[in-house]
Every structure is written in structure tokens, then in C-alpha cells.
Image (cartoon, rainbow, N blue to C red; front, side):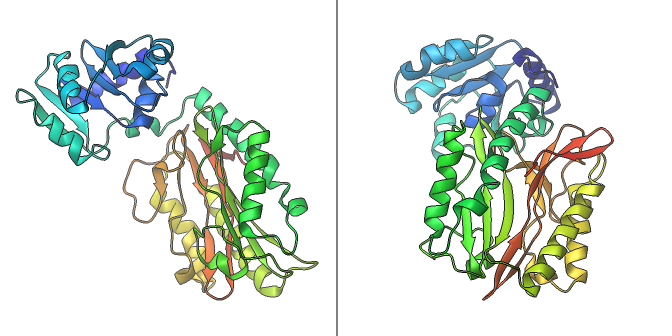
Length: 353
């Protein structure tokens, strides 16, 4: 896909025809940024066959002028209930699609005050176009992943007995920011010992002890794009037999899944490959989440590598995580996660740690 916003507008206008609407109203920050380049926290886009409108307020006016030169700017000066109908009137259309996954009840109530417009709820709007990344988007993801790789490689030298999960999380965040990350892609997950049985454990005051497993799941944000990486460590001279057994099962499942990623495969098929390996080893009930997800401007995007996902098959240019895990109450857990780019003939890893 070409990165030029005009080409994105062409895609959206074709989507209008397919969806039997005359316009599309975009309020979600991520979709707004993807289409227009505008990164302000408040604004609306309205796309029709002839017009591309961006409405925002005084705080972001100059920013919008710089970031969205292909859009006509409309200043929103007052309350949403008063200004949004005026903004919509600029489009001069009668049937407008809205983001069914993102619009709030309050916003929808405001839209209903515009009596001469028929509103059509669309479940997937720009998300379907965001699945396949432009080369510049892939490069931004690679750059964010490089920061995460560098910091993850320092965990062994940072962690020490007596350190708390909160302390390790903070130390890793500081190092990501020192390397240039604009922020975290998501709150860092740190789980020591039996806390690792909680797949999304929130770092607490649990202190690190010899013989503990350490799950680190973190991501950086850079130029708006995310990375996501998980590694599981063992604190001690030699991992115990349980750790080695489970680690190798998880690693085998991940490698088999990645080996089979290619265009045309479905997320459900890739999930099953990893899940069958874990299940045949006797730990099927201990792997309770999906294998992975797409990633880009958001840390969780389509496509999904999931037994529950019936979306489009994988295609070249998609970026996904592959993150099998096994979680055992009273013992802990092991998860291994890498970023993978779907290529024309297979895949390659973005993560290098």
C-alpha cells in the first residue's frame, strides 16, 4: 500500500461505495492518525466522494495544518453537541457510516440530532486497511522492536535477588526511554515465580528469589508504532527440570507456528499448530489465550492468531506476534513472544533478542 494519504483516501472512497454510504465519520484516534497523519488527541474526519474534512479545536489547529495538508480544516469552537452537527453539515451528504466499534453512546446521541442524515453502523472501517503495513510502517515497527531487543538483553544484568517486580518494570521503562522510546506500547508485565501463572500479571512488591522464573513482557512506542516482546528467564545457576521441560515445549510450539506462517494461512490454522503441540505434551488446559495478534499503531490489531478468529487469511506485509505460553498455578508460567513479518513466500522474525 502506498503511504501517500491521497491513496489511502482512494481506498476509503472505494469502501464507501462497497458499504452503500455517501460518507464515513472517523472519531477514533488511531484510525484518524492512520488516514490523515493528525496526531492530536481531539478531532473528527469526514470523508465523502468529493471531500476530506478534519474538524478540531484551537489547541491543535496549527498541528493539523502541518500534519494533514490534504484535508480541509474545520474549527470546532464549542460543545460537541453544538459543533458536531455543523461539521457534518459541511459534507452535504445524507447517508454516513460510523465506526461501530468506537463510537460512544453520547456521541451517537449527538449524531441522532442531525435529522436529515441516516447513520449506518459499520463494524470494520479502516481496521481492514491497517492490517497490511506499508514499508515505512514496517520500518517504524522494526525500530521500536530494536529498542525492546536492546533492553530485554539487559535483564540478566539488571535483575538481582531482593528486587521487586515494580523495580524491574521501572528500570526497563527508564532504559527504553533513554534509548529514544516515546513511551510504552502497554504497561510492562513482570512476573516473578508463581506470579507467572497469571498471563497478564501486574507488577507488584513480590521480591525476586533464587530459583524464580522471571517473565518479562514489554514493548516500546516509537513514531506512533508499537513493539511487543516476551522472554522468560530463570534466576540461578541451573534451571530445574520443570522449567526446562515447559520452556522447550513452549519454544517448540512457537517455532512450529512461525515456520508455517505464510500468505493464505489463517490465524486459526497457525494457532492450532502451536496449540496441538502444547496439548499433546499434556498442557493444553494451561494455554488459555490466543497464540498472537496483529500489531502496528496499536499493540493489539487484526489479524488474530486465534482459534476464535474468522477474519481474512494472512497476507504479505502483515505483522503479528507469536506468543504461546504455559501457566501452572502455584508454580508459575513460561511465555515466549516474537514479532513476525509475513512475507510473500513465508515469514521472518522482526525480534532479534
